[in-house]
Image (cartoon, rainbow, N blue to C red; front, side, top):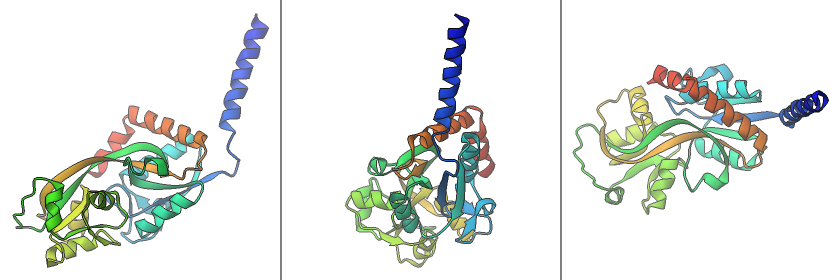
Length: 250
């Protein structure tokens, strides 16, 4: 009986080791991110950074998640989002964060998360008294958004035709100069970007969606990787690490 138990235990241990060793020794995930404060951003506010030159709520969580899961990665912050999104769609073992999870995007990637929660809003310039009851009411106005961002994609799916910028910060100046009437963006990201541009007092005209941010992985990413990362994230959340990181930036 002891021999059987010992053999069974050894088998389970070897099985666990085999499952853990399914990945090649040189396996690495190529992680991409952008300036999307306070979730991920370059320490020096530039449009290119690597590794320790990147911080933010999601960046801190993702680093700890990969460390705990025992998976190697490289991390770089680049520009624009549209290019990063297409790279992650096309290249095996690429990952992108912070990516808003939507039903339309669900079949395009493998997902780990949520890393954080956000809201989608329409912002107006200080002193603007626009009032909207629904998103469709915005169709009569010039609405600025961020190209290939989930907010912009959602507006287009609702029949709106947003004026898309390659940098979301551009919409702050457009709003103040009257080139757009409303800025469709993520809260609190929009206010954070506006503050960086020296602008405060933007008015929330409409909050039209609540969303969650994830790590999106190329569809060819091994399930073993996804499972280990999700397990690590779940543990970090249970231990209070996720809340701690969130509170340290907001």
